[in-house]
Length: 355
Image (cartoon, rainbow, N blue to C red; front, side, top):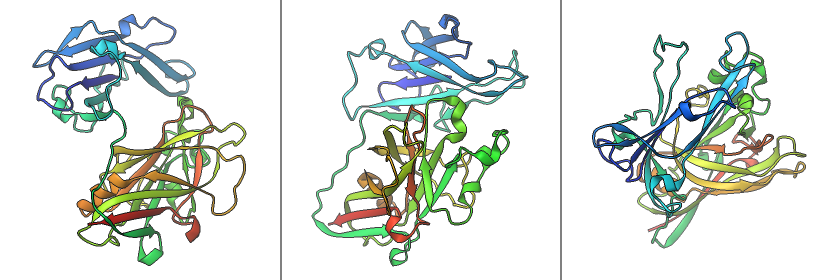
């Protein structure tokens, strides 16, 4: 795996002295990592190997590392880069933006034949052109509007004709059980959990790579056509009704993020493999577990999506969002009602606007 950083932002057509490249290779812990990682710095046209201190830790789940005769559930790489290695005394201030890119390298033979293309982010990233990289923004983006409030619009599926669409990708509530034990044969391309009226969705993640069939994301799209034309968005809040979670006796708090999505999708065709990638992390809310069912319609959980609504409204697009968590512990799943539930439990967007 390779991580690219540019302390000047995602600008420039070649890596310079503020550009860094960190490469880490899979090995079999607890083997020494010295010969399995290397750092580079930009030289104005490309990369030069450099003595930049960082740590990497490889992990894998299966019967053995690279075992062709047993189960390989996957591998992961953790890369830790001290701020001091980048010439900084500590974390940059909120609002600072770095350039960021990643590449995952793969080979199925010792000589690398046949060659397997790198999986990169962003999808059009060029390793020697920082302007093609993504952005690492310290702190969540802020939003404010000087407009005076004039009105509020509430958007919910079925209310005043609004059509709000939501969909589930990943393992849903049962960790993709219909595809057990051969998860690789269908799990990633499944639209199984969006068939018919399903009034519940799950947001779930964890650090244990072997449990990846349990990972679950939720996508939701709100039309903004009910907001009067030529207004300024002052604030907007997304509310989902929380009614349960995985294994209440062991469940822990979840940090659930709301991210904007820049592409359209359809409930009937979206899957884990073809779902649009997130465009920007907009908001995060800590969601505590529920020890028992709280009664209908659940406990409301809120996210500030003012900036996301303002951006979508300004371009005449619907508000397209994805919800996912950055959880480490097992049993992190949080259960919410979807737009297929009765009206009181449905996701709701409340927008205050002015001029």
